[in-house]
Length: 284
View 1: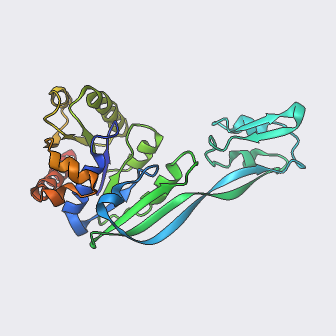
View 2: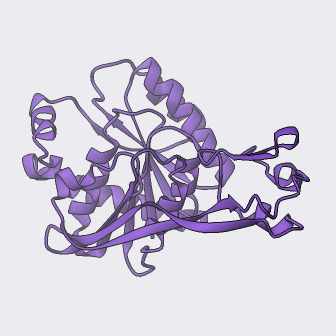
View 3: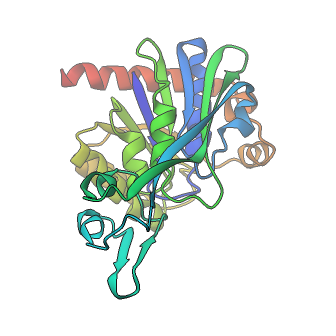
């Protein structure tokens, strides 16, 4: 089973939930950190990294001596990553926009465009808590588009495990890529106007993707009841509410997981998993 942990906004406690769920399920789970621009699950799980895999993507280059500056490469690029300046006989590549699709080299009639492999980031594989697999992606500094690294991390998903996928905040392309293929999505929110606004966006995203979702409300006693009213109106289950406690905040700042400070939450997170199983069974 693949369970994605997402949130419409940052700072809601998404990683708190993801690490706690993985620790509660133990050897039956594995943790995949797909927040590759800023992975932080390792701070709480303290894994032993055993393998580092470099991820490369093809980047187009041009042999000016062959180029006739016809502009076909620029026309075929949907991302506007190539500009052909015919009067000056120049071809400009904007690599931040390039998706490494290979279309430009395919259509070039002069075979002037070729590709070179460039490092995009890394995937680190290890063991957390001594009992379950830990996989995290790291996007190389200055690189744009984390999607290739997310795809590389998800290659380590195992069908016989409960795969806990920690997703970056928001509803952008990297979030969609990380959630894609999940059996269930836990949306972590907080009972504030900002929390509700971004939760609505996240719910709409999961609906369009056809992925069932449930809500976890963190710091549930510090705001209003608008989030609960919304979930009732939309028929979305609230899987767990975690009240604000200073001890949780202090332990989090020290990199200590929630279930280590309050062991009673191990049972609560196991019950959350049972609720998810029941929801998925009822959908069949």
